[in-house]
Structures are given as structure tokens and as C-alpha cells.
Length: 576
Image 1 (tube, helix red, strand yellow):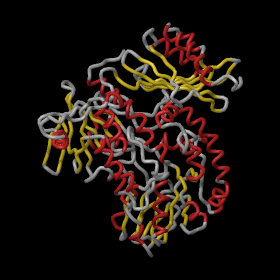
Image 2 (cartoon, one colour):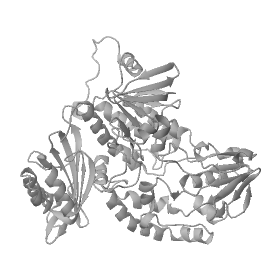
Image 3 (tube, one colour):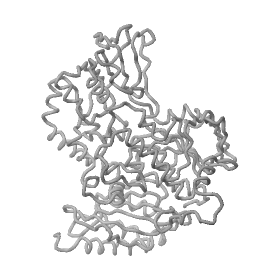
Image 4 (cartoon, helix red, strand yellow):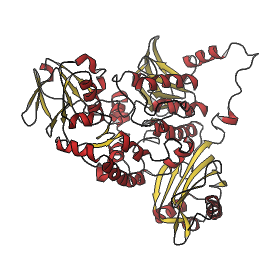
């Protein structure tokens, strides 16, 4: 195979054969156009679920079950961006219609046995017929001049929810809550977001003073509202917090701040929740049909019950409570935990002038921001990369199990580039690993939501001995003037920061909604047998409870899919 034939011609020829097979509901014929080691990821377009099908046998079984002559119609190749050669692969995009609405797809073709076949194929529902998002040609024309009142008056009244019930209540105005509320609103679903802090963005704004996002700008926009081209590659937390506040206003999201749900119950027969909400104006009761928990994977601090803490004469708190290292200049601090938060807080305290010891309880995966982040995000989320909507399609078109498999090579390449830093850490006694089965940061992020550190300076401080290291022994108990480690060592400390991670989102659901709801829910995170993340962006086992969360790139991509499912449910659309 050579590039003398254009990528467009190659893709068009393959797509023509696939179109004929799909329109004939020929599962075997469609499968023959796929690689032996193929991946078909369907996001609501054919199966009305999120799922990964790997290998021809699995794909053909899925098609046998779901494919009908009208499953995919009006299939067309996208020429706005692509098809294009990427090495030996041709990447291309498609649009199509389904009985429910309008879809998009991303395909990677590669040569196999002297023909072009699909290595990865992703099909997604993009809009629900009759409930299309009000964007582009479908956008509102705006208020009419002769209308009574004005836009601001109407917005204020709408946010009050006086005399009407929200269709959906979202708990949390972080990136997940804002993204799904934006999608639901554009689909015509009346959505209320409850945020217990005083301002939208406080989930970032109130974190420690020196915090900067680790993910790059090209991956981090919220849906429908790209950043200015002057936006920094790595965004300071206060800047992102202010952007979130602007986003909620610009997207006309209905947010109650300083609002906390104090009790809940669900009426199975009526299909309605009763939520009691404490607000600055008094207690309110709302009755949505669906609730989305969007308090984040880092919403429930994990604070082990260490003996002696009540007798400790210094200050101790979980890493989520750290604000600024400046208060601890000239004093002794111990940070327990050696992943992202532990390293960042140790660096913050050191740079403020504290005497810092980092307690490493188990090995940590380390990458530098300089080399590790480009390896993870690749050329799709980079300066000069594809437009975001196509980068997102390519990302969604790479199933999570394949992401993990591909990550292994990136781990090796990053370690080679970071060799000097890693060797210095080894010499200091810091214990490292390559992630679960060599999958590095992605393996940890998908399975646990932590376990790694993206180095922005703390690793060199540890290697140089400027941040002291107590390695290989966890905290056994507090003493009046510090802590005792499991190996018997004692450390004096004016401050002890417990960077001990967070509990699963299901435990947040348990605290807020009780055992009756939580016991019906899956754990969040971890890749299931269907190749998808447990619990997120899909049905949970409770008919009116949904999870939303993840990094900015994830919520931008998958908030739409969650909103489509809820919109269809509320519209009484029951897919086969």
C-alpha cells in the first residue's frame, strides 16, 4: 500500500463497501471489512449503550443482535477534516442517521492481506431527533423587542424555579456538572445545578494556592466554549475557576450556589425524587425526575483513623484542606502520601520555607510534565492538532482497553526521556513503578483515580534531599509532637498533611442518598468486561440516578452521551 492513492479515495472506497453491507443488514459482510484485531466502540448509536467489541467474533455477534436495514442510513464521508494518512493508517470521519437521530463516527483503516480494513471504528449518537441541541443553525433567535420584560428578568425568574419543578437536579458545579447541565439545557431538559460553595468554580478556587492544572489547554475546554488562543498551556486554578463561573453564565445554566441537599427520597411509582435543599433564602423542596451526582472522584476524602490523632498538639488535615504553604514557613511539616497531591503540597510547603518530610507508603509512578504529558495526549491534543471536535472523535474512537495497551509504549519512551530524573530518584531511595501491568498513569487513572505523580518540580527536590523522604513505612500513629511510622521511626511535626486519597464516588452517594440508593450503584472507575469505565456516563442500576465526573477532556466528550440518555428517558423514547 502506498500514499500514491489519496487517503480520501481509499476511505471512500472502503466506506462504500461498508455502507452496502450495513444497509443490507449483512453482519458477516460488514465484519469482513474489519481487521482481525478490530475494535468497534458503540456509543448509543446502535446498541443504546456504551460498549466495546473487540475482534471479528465479538463484532459480528453484536451486529447479529442489533443491526437492521435502517440502523444506519444516509452514511456520508466527512471532508471538512480528513480523511488523512497518519503513518500507515488512514483516519476518516463519517456522519449517518439512525432511527433515533443523527450520528457521527471515527474510523482508522490499515492494510491487512492486501486490502484496507478498519482497525478501529466508533459510532456515536450525536443528536436525538426532535430534541436536537440548540446550536449552530438551530440556535435561538434571541428575545423579541416587543416582548414584555427583558432577558435578564426572565433569566432571574427561570433560575428561581418558582412554581415549577426541574426535570433534572445536578449535584456539583465542577466541570462534570457544568458540562452535563449545558448539554441537557441545549436538549430542552430543564436542569438545576446545586453547588454548596459560595461561587461556581470554588471547587478549584479554594484548593491550595499554587495549584496549576497538569493537563494541557488543547484537551481542557468545556463543551461549546473554546478557550481564547492566548490561554496558557497549563492553567492556574484561579483562572480556571473564574472561567467556570463565566461558562455557567454564558451557557445560561441554572445554578443555586450556597445550596446543599440535606435529605432525599425516591418514589418508585411516581418516578420522582423529593430533595430538601438548604439555601441562603431558606429551605426549598424540589421534585426532579432524575438526579446526577457530579461531586467528582475527589469528593469524598479518605482519612484513615490513625490512633493518637486527638492527642496530637499540632495541626493535621486531609490534603483537600490545604490552602497555602506560606503559613508554615520555618516550621516542620510531614506529608503522608506520595502521589500528585502529596508531591504538590510538599513542594508548596518547601517553597514557602517549611522543613518538609514526605512519607512514601508504597511505590509511585513518576513522569515529567515535559515528556509524559505529550506522550499521553499525543498529537491530537497539541498545538496545530486537529480541531477539538475531531480530536474528541479520535479519542472516543480509541477504546479504553486499547488506550491501556498503547500506553505501555508511551511509558517506556517517557522513562527513557526522563532517565536522569528517575535515576536521581532511585538514588534517593524513592520507590517507583510503571503502573498496573506497565500502563503507567492511564492504568492508574482508569483503575484508581490516583497512584502517580506528574513532576513539576517536587521530584528534583526529593532527589536533591531538599524535601526529605521517609520511604517504605506508613504512618502507624500520631504522637503529641508528631507521628510514629510503622517501622518505629518518629518524626516531629508542627503540621501533618494526610494526602491519603479519596473514596469511591459510590461512598459519596451513600453519604448523601443512603444505603438504599448506594447499594444499587456500581463502583466508579475501573474498566469492566464491556471495555467501559464502571458507572460513568451511563445507566447505574437505579432508574433515576446517574454519575458524572472525570477530567475536563472526559466530561467534554461524554457529558453529551449522558444527556442523550436522560433526554430520551424523559421524552418517553424507549430504544430497542
